[in-house]
Image 1: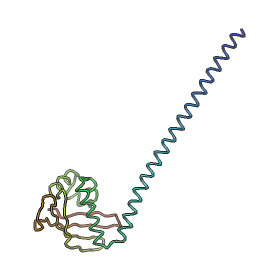
Image 2 (image 1 turned 60 degrees about the vertical axis):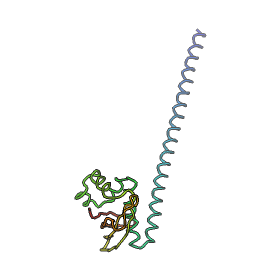
Image 3 (image 1 turned 135 degrees about the vertical axis):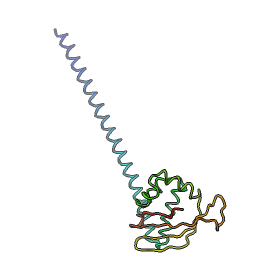
Image 4 (image 1 turned 180 degrees about the vertical axis):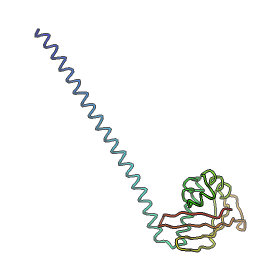
Length: 175
């Protein structure tokens, strides 16, 4: 009977030790999972901080520029998106009613800019006028890659509404 009791005690101790090991493994797994989640959250926060720092740097730069230079910078952002085939980003810069009237979908906008804007453009800023927070740029666009002559530039008006530094919407004359 004592031998049977010893066997039962060994089984109970074995089960207890097994449960203890399982609990330790579970706690360790949860701790590692939490550390991984914390690391991912920190990394995401860091990426957001980097994006915010870039925005702040651009805003600081824009505050030191004259109006004309800021408007040319804004149009340059738009044109760069088009040249890099980032049509969604360019589309998102457009004034909502302008999009609604001329380019109700990203696809219609994409088709238009692929036909109208050259792969690599040379911009000649001819004039600028301001009316409150609305600026109108008169520009000429030439196709640099295909060697179009200066007199073959497409003429276009760009309308930019600056809400704040680095916060703007735009539209343009549809040609």
